[in-house]
Length: 99
Image (tube, one colour):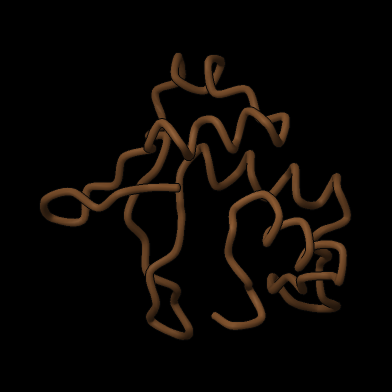
């Protein structure tokens, strides 16, 4: 979905844009915003790279709408649902259970 450039600079690939479009995420409106589409970020607790920026926010919103993820109680963490595991696998070709 994204490729890593020099110095942790991420760019949305054509394939990634197509996948987001198929999921119902309108990238054209996002490109007009001042905020970066995708940016480098490290998770504060696990110290792992993850997606940040406008695309991350739109993708999370859409995944909530589809019931692919849900908020956990008393936390900012989210839980992937069974439909979410299937949806991510079918849409993006990866198995989140194996990650």
